Structure formats: structure tokens, C-alpha cells
Image (cartoon, rainbow over all chains, first blue to last red; front, side, top):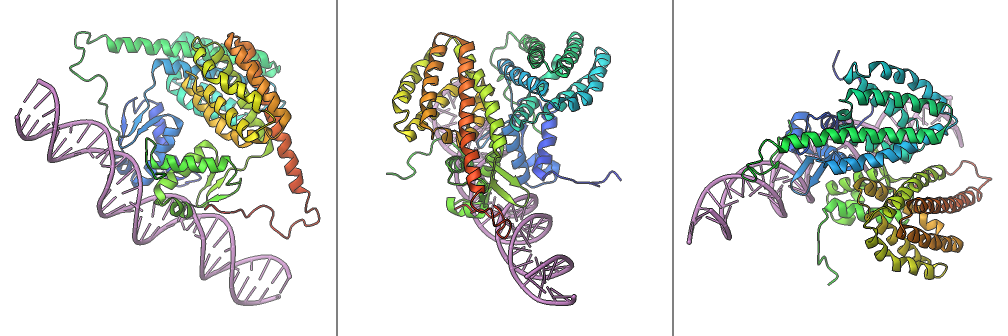
Length: 245
Length: 245
DNA sequence: GCGCAGATTATTAATAATCAATAATTATTC
DNA sequence: GAATAATTATTGATTATTAATAATCTGCGC
């Protein structure tokens, strides 16, 4: 019964891309990993064509960097770039909140996310994994409720990126609690149609998440830099990385 | 001498994609046109692979829609979607203006675009083609001066889309003159570092362009709908479109 | 003429085998 | 031991072929 009962939608390269994206986002393939066509094609039991397509797709999504004749590596983003990423995200998430708050049909979304947001209050500080999952789900609900196709798609693409780092911010219990409160406040602002307030809350939360995530990253970056202060060059620094599959 | 003297960067599919994008943006391939792999591959003298890649690329850029087993057609965007597109663009263009105005190194950009913007004043109402070219160039300069990589790339992608329609707005001499004035005002605001004013000017101009372009589109849409009010169905309405090459 | 089942056609999706181009690595020579 | 040359790994691109699918056409009975 657990066989490929229902295929339903999605072309081959899309399925491959989705699988690989998952692995990149959840850290299975760390930044710098090489994604080698031959290995992937034997893992998935497919020819090179669909794999190629999938890698190109991930490149457009920004998860992978393709260099001519050198192939695909998981994009490595500097802390500075991550900060910039969240800066754009904050602006767009603010816009999302404002437009939703001003949307006459916002009631549908409000009804759909009220329960999950309440659950976030209870989960904060208790179950990090479940909290993260719920937060991601609520976030997706917000984005998908947008009637504006373009904002929907640019936000989805940015979110795919940030989800690589947001989970770091949620390691802090304090941030979990803060985030839960802000989501509730956002919901309230949306319910009464206060676009101004909604925009403010949403973008402020995004900035806080950015600060929390980058704090974490700078910390681990320092820890990684510290161990070998006496060996400056012999081992080429961070060049060789593991392969896929 | 007009042979392929210098190749310089760019892989094959990129070059094909660039060419096709050009044709879509300038209207050579109108919305709904089919882009058939076989025809394109013989036109470009390439095999299917690179063509496929290029079409996938254009799909990600939103210029082309690919339906499984049916191939690529030039994306047809409804007037409503175009309005939504400009709405997002207005917000991001505003952000761009603000960030540039607040950038300590904005002097470099200001120096680079001062002359072109002055030229726009002179061209407005005189040479539409040259005005459009200059406006596009200035716009690109603004975007490329951004230090934030993500805003740069999302804006580039949105601009590629809007450039299909902005040229419609510039058909109006009044809009050309208005646009030229606003660009000058924007430059002034940036020069003195007034981010608030810069954002306002930029997003207002974008909205005006939107209104002008959609006015034009709604007009032609009505004209197209009008001619045959007596023949409701015999000829299948707008289904068959021309092919590529 | 009308509608419909089925054959035909056009086109893309995917595979496979092959060669060329290139970057990285290793070996060689001075 | 450093510069240079050979080797290797991997991608870029071509070609040919088969499968899958959607659109179109055909003929049949009415």
C-alpha cells in the first residue's frame, strides 16, 4: 500500500527539486556541498536531464550556485548577506500584513490561523520543533492568502531562503515567546483592519528574527574561527566540502 | 568583422534566453505565442538541450508559461495582474529610492545619472524611443547601485516584467514630461539624503506609470472586443496564435 | 449538418550513448 | 620546491530514440 499510489501533479524535475530544496533547507546538505549530477541521477534512478532541470530550478531559487563546468554547490551566504536578506523580507512582510489588514476578505484567513496562533502561545518555550512547524505553517497561510500574485511569489521565494536561518532564531526561548506574542498582536491588528499597525508589527518581528539569527551565526562563526589561530594557511580554508548522496 | 568576435562570459542557454526575453519584451513575440523547441533549435542552430534550459529560465522570469507536454507560450498577463505587478513594483522602487538616499556612497550613482536625467528633460515629448531607452538605462543604474543583493535581484526580475508595459505609458507625451520632472525631483531628494521624500516620489511615479499603462491597455482591450459584436462564436476566440521563428 | 469514438499527428518528456570543454588534481621535470 | 605538463573528474552539448500526452482530424451513424 505504501507504493506510488497517487502521483498527482508535479513533473519529474519539480519533484527532484523539491526533495533537494528540503535537504538544503533542513541542513542535510550544508553550504558549500557539491551536488553532482551523476550521483544524484543514480540516487533518484533518473537520467541527467531531469536532474539538470532541478538544479537549474534551485539556482533560480537561490539555494544553489552553478558555476560553468564546475557544477552546483549549495549557496553559501555570508552573515552580511543574511542581514540584507532579512531587511528585504522585513519590508515585504510588512507590506503583506498591511495588504491583508486592508483586504475586505481577510476574515477567512483570520479564521484559519486563529487556532494555530493560539497554539503558538502554548508551545513557546515548550516544544521547539512543533513551534517552528506551526510558525512556518502560519507564515505560509499568510502568504498564500495574498490576492496579489507577484507579492505572493516573491515572498515565497524569499521565505524559502530565510527558512534556512529562521530556525536558528527560534533556538532562543525568549525569542519564541516574543514571536508568539507578536503574532497574536498582528492577528488582532489585522482583525480590526489597522494596516498601519499590522505593517509595523510584522516588519519589527522580522527584524527581531534577523537579529536573533545573525547573533547566533556570528557566534558560531567565531567558534569555528577560534580553534586554530596558529595555523594560518597550510590547510586550504573551507574549500573542500562533502558531496551529495 | 561583424562575426562572433568576442564571446565573453555567458553560457549558451543564457544567450538564447536573453535573445528570447528581448523579443518578448519588445513585442516580437506577443502574449500567447508558442515557443516551439524544434523551431527555435533550428533557428539558433543548437540542439534541444540549451533551448530547453533557456525556456525554463524564462519561465522562472515569468515571461513564459510552460505547460506539461504542451510547451512554452509567452505569458499573457491580465490587466488586473499588471496593476498588481506595478503595485509591488511601486513598493520596491520606493524602498530602492529610500535606501539609495540613505547610502553614504550615493554620490557615485548621482554623478553617473545626473547627465542622463538632464537629457530626459530635453527628450521628453521630442524623441520617444530615445527617451524610453534613457529611462530604462537610468532605472537600471539605480537598481544596480543597490548594495543589497536581494532587492537588486527581485527588482531586476520585476523590472523585466514591467518593461513590457512601461513603454505603453511612455506613449503619452504628458506622462513623459511628468516622468522626467519626477526623476529630477528624485535625484534632488537623493542628493540631499532625504529618504522619506525619495521613497514617496519614486513610488508615486511608479503608480502614475501603472495608471497610464493600464489606461492604455483597457482602451485597446475594448477596441479589440468591439469590432465583432455580431459574430459570437464561429471563429474560436483568441485560441490559435502564431509560432516562433 | 451533428456529435462522438477512435486514429493520427505534433510536440514535449525522458533516456542513453557519445564527444568536447573545462577545472582541479596529480605527476614530472628542471 | 616551483613551474609545467599530463591526467582525471565533471559538466556542456549533440544526436538518436522511445514514451507520453494533447490537439486535431476522420469517418461513422444518425
